[in-house]
Length: 119
View 1: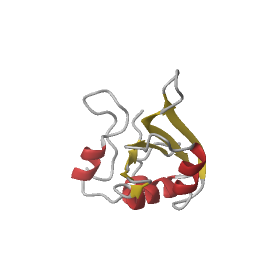
View 2: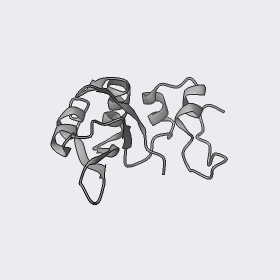
View 3: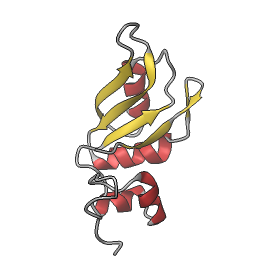
């Protein structure tokens, strides 16, 4: 039923995929209420500009709520961005607002892809 979060999807992840949650027709706030959001509110961010800084990411995501941590994936040799990262929001409400407002929005010339990170 819609009121219960599935225990695992076919890949063995504890949280249903973004597309599975979308098929249920639930808003992110409803997903949070029903237990679909991971407890730590970690977001995956893709299509980041290659020269973006952690400070710029923190400032951009702070428009949706308090940012607890930014982990920007970089190349070891050059410290250049790999174009993706993880943002830990302070709570589920901030994470839901970040996905709703920042997914598909332009940031430093690139359209960001923002969704809940999968464990």
